[in-house]
Structure formats: C-alpha cells, structure tokens
Length: 195
Image 1 (spheres, rainbow, N blue to C red):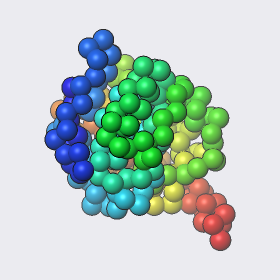
Image 2 (tube, helix red, strand yellow):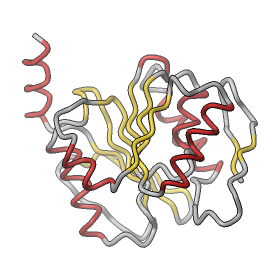
Image 3 (cartoon, rainbow, N blue to C red):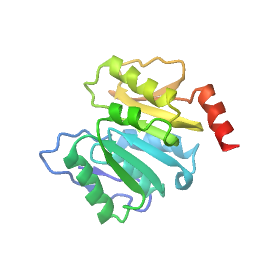
C-alpha cells in the first residue's frame, strides 16, 4: 500500500495485491524528492522516464502532479498491467505509457529515440554496483537526458555511485537519491539537432 502525496489525486491510497513483491519509495523520501524536482521543473511540461517502475508509485505521482508524458518501464507483466489498470481508474491513461521489458535491454534498444527532462531509476535493492554503473552509462551516453535534464537513481545509502556526471546525493534513512547531469557532448548534439 502506498499513497499519492500531492496533485489531483493527493492522499489517494493505492493497494497492490498481497503477492506482489514490491518496495515502493517511502512517502517521506518521495515527498523530499518531489520537493527538489518541483523547485527546478514545471511538472506540466516535462517528460519523464521511470525505470524499474514497479507498481507505478513514482509514475502515478508525476501524473497526479500534471505531468502529461510519463514512460514507465517494468519487466514484470503483472506490475505493468497493475500500472495500466490504476492509470485507467484514475483517468491517467493518456499521461502514462507502460513498456514491458528488461530495463537494460530496453535502454539499448531505444537509444536516441527520445530524450527526457527527468529519468528516474529505482533498481531492485539487491542490484550489484556494476549494474548501477551500466545503468548510468546507458542513460548518460545514449542521450536519454535533455540538456536541462537530470537522472535520479534510488539506491541503498551504503552504496556510493561515483561518476563524472554526479551532482549530489540526498539520504533518507537507508534510501538515497543520487542525481546526475547530462554529458556536455549530449547537450551539444541535441541542441544541434534542434537547430
């Protein structure tokens, strides 16, 4: 069970079936995360990529706050259908597009297809450090971020995910969010494509 913190569906409780093996971001951490994001971005005009979307806690939070373009990538078919049914129930089907697949394979397959202001990744907590580095590389080297974009990785606080694009980490108990900026080369190429 989790709740939507703010926006159109503020305080709405979302109950996943009991047999789902999920770990939604805590309310406290989610509130802090969105406080940071809303100081930088207008939620109604950003595009978001939610990786390892689980049962949609983060995707639904963005949609509730008015975001019109959320892509949720999740491997478990039961979870993707739960996101779809919840989005339909809350009248968010036009805002959230679910993609079923392994996140690493999906990122390799769709490289350069589209870029986003916000990429959020909440890999399973037992993910090895080297897989996090693969994730960082796939997102940052393949221009998934717009020039003003940010990649946010949720991970165990004991992990330190150093990378040249690292900006800062915010710690909330045993959960941390690490923020990464786009590579300058990606910024140049995207702005050249737009001109």
